[in-house]
Length: 276
Image (cartoon, rainbow, N blue to C red; front, side, top):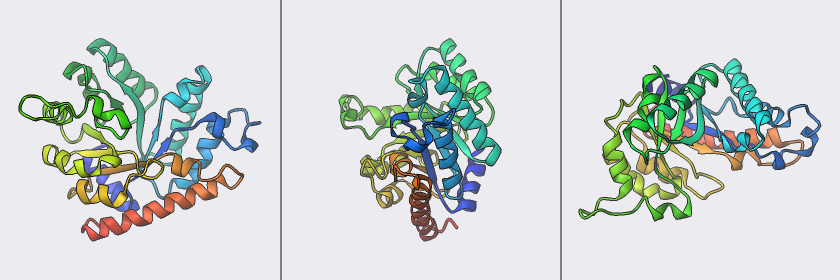
């Protein structure tokens, strides 16, 4: 998917919502547990409920890998189901990989050839050669961790060099020329919303994947105020706030309602910024 195609989907759905599929088997409603594959049954129902309001889905690999081979099967079935329902949906494997070049090449093949996602989250800590294999696939994206929303992000990401430049700023400055805006995206946490203004100065055109809205306390309005560009440039992720809106048999209805509320808020933001 190209940059313009992603923006086109945002305009079509009047939304920049990404639904995080952080599916914890321990939190799946009990009535689904007798299913042959409860994780896939849950995901399928969530997708059906939220598809009208989302432009992207982001399965978090940890929640599938913990289940071993069965988890990978659930993940593959989930990706295939989403593709069958909506081929134009943007799919992100939240894998946070990052290793030397030959290993990264294998990871890239895993996600882009075997799993058929559009993007993979990566840690850029080991440098350029860990990212480049992912950029060799036409229409695919590398999503680099830049400024995360976890409490201990400051342990490293705010480290300053002698000139006062923070590490996350160095990551952005160094990596932005590794690929084009059609290939590179950055993770910036919603709980760091005011830092988005600094991020935007360094990468004015790139899309930003923004987790932390909802359960983690991030503000959608602040994210848009500081982070939106003239092509929207945002994919705002919500995981727990949608997935676990209810633990009862009405979980899909409640998930759809949460997604619809976010989409309606996003539509207003897009209109107020002249993007619709």
